[in-house]
Image (cartoon, rainbow over all chains, first blue to last red; front, side, top):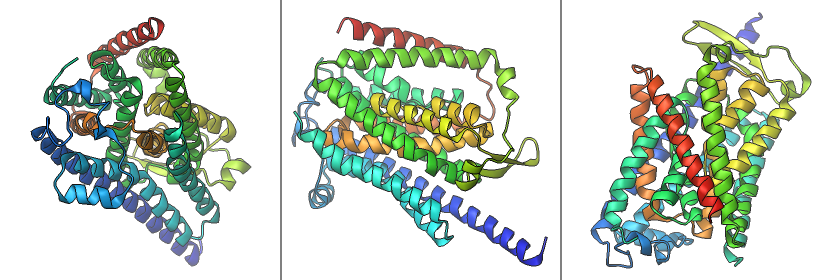
Length: 145
Length: 290
């Protein structure tokens, strides 16, 4: 192998190692932060069950407003700041849902940094499908009775 | 059904820790147990049960994939390419489930779930009985143009064999087809459908077993995110239903991954098959008498 070939080989290994590390960090932080928020949120919600719109029994849960999706960031954050348990869980759930998307987005950018055009394109397709399902199919299904 | 909320949270936390623990020990996700337990024992409407389960599936995937992706066993290109199929499938699956529930065809969801549970029990027993057979894995090393163009190849260092193994995917189109089906099942029933993803990569595309399982782990989260987004907007992701399940499954799976190194759980596998069969039969019955 030529000297430049060896150098390329080493750079490639370094790149793949970095790619794995970045993916690992995003997944770990995503899951740890959301699990922490969900745990804190459920404790607060249980302490308030029977008031603040939180039902006291399981049977009332699916018909109460507790399960309504939070669609505005301002509403979500003001709920979290007010230490509303349900909103804290919602934030945790949304971070959990966003983690795979963020991971694919960052990986796609890193494919771009390596000038891997095929995988930049494939990554964009995955992101488009994810955004399409949540922001186009989701509202369509929600509005259909 | 006037179960106090706090009782639900504690009971479901226990069930979810168990599901995550057993799932990690026997090598499947806990999602397949969550939906039957929520619908059969807690009388939760199936749409909400599926919404709850799919969120916990993302949690388990993120938790377990983070360890393997760092070791470079997971093939990020294979994963990224194949999730184009699983996410499209999952979107179709989620839309189908919502349609079935809205049209009063909920029995069809129960029946599908029952069949998938029984089939998993069957597939799982087969793997147990013929473990020796499946251990002799065939890894493809013959290049082909499609896999070459899509860079569906790699090498990884096998700790047990103490050597580097190169591989390249074969039968890419067939593997992609299996991934579409795995995606539909995931979105339809709120499960990870990891077993089918592994079949697609390991048996169809002839990738190494370890690469298949770890890449499947990573793909499960992206697949689940596609349908979870739809279920969330639809209002099927109830934060209080979700909380004990997501946290419990994570804790269980984490504990399971630590125990796994020391225990060889063959009696646990038998127990797991029995649980799958019982839940499968109950779900079928619920679909028939619905």
